[in-house]
Image (cartoon, rainbow, N blue to C red; front, side, top):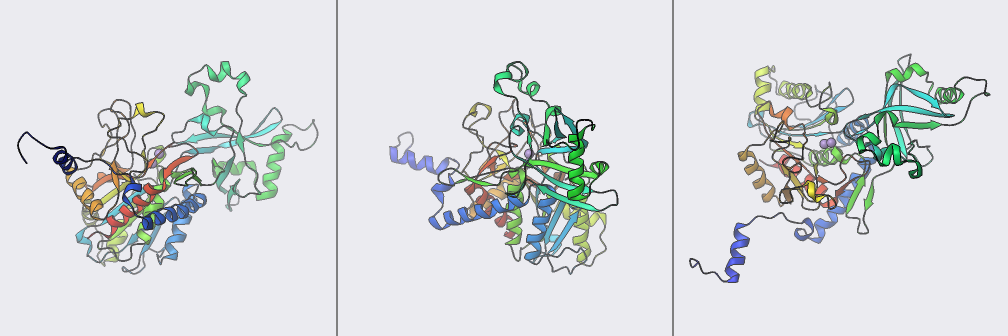
Length: 474
Ligand code: MN
Ligand code: MN
């Protein structure tokens, strides 16, 4: 090329050769793959409907894994794919690789809890001749989004005698639903409209309406409350004290739906992070003989800081690693376990907030993830100066983008909002402590943490396709 003087054609060629820009999935895939994208989205919606709580997600994952020959027994033969479940709220799937363990393992970790409202331990009361349940929200929610919409109650109750009752009320067409009342706009000026959002909507007013039939006549004290207690006793054999040993979660009662005339998007509750859970699940189920031993882990409690026995900060992963080593006939030592964890190449599988068309000002557009541009790699999360971020290594990013490119996975990069505005975290840093290579990876999401989160079917498919490439790579 002549120095200084370039034709338009030369410059276009140069631009193509030197510049990087993310690619829209629809511009890159053929008709066949487009059909696979749409079919994958349909199966994903079914998983979302069956898995509205962490416990239900564990049941779905276990069932689907068992159908593919995984065995829920840590003492099963080393060649068999294994399931390990922890307190019915987190679950690990392990598929042995062709290579020996000292070649390292592949690990994917997503979370299966989602923002919601939990019932308080003494939830039931009555006010103005209506019966209610009191709630305490779980994770980061915009409270007003939970008002005036149909809600379902899912969860587990341990009764006085120790018997277990599992409920999911509000899901079947014939079920009643529940709701949180909102104030009519005519009267809202002083108490809502003219206030700041977090003062206008307060947690203590997120009370679930559960009934209005009285029991007995007006001489009976708290007869609306008593009526609900009586109903719950007839239906489930419950007494009020049983609420003390219950975990009841209030979630949106709607099902996952296609969004848009062209059905290209999916709207559903809990896609953060069951989008990553489902895609990583399908990737390990569809990977028959991985080169390396693969572990796909689904954890709980991410939305409240990853504390607690079933969270990413617990020793669950370590115990899975010990099981894997024990299967290779060695007596596992801490040194073996740390060596194996340190050798892992890992994906912290979680969604990233996509560029919001109506609030583009909170993003830095050049670096924000966009709906429809494929799975998103997020080098660092954290807030204001990367505080609390894992910050993946350049070497690892180099490897991962080569892997995705080689396997024709459409990908992009993202961050969590503008430098001085954004913030957030994932489980990546809790796994990085073992010295493993790890990066945040997952589909972009609109309306994150709302009762109706939006994903793009192409992004969901590319997340799966990338996971499969990651697990299969040798
Ligand atoms: Mn998440
Ligand atoms: Mn989240």
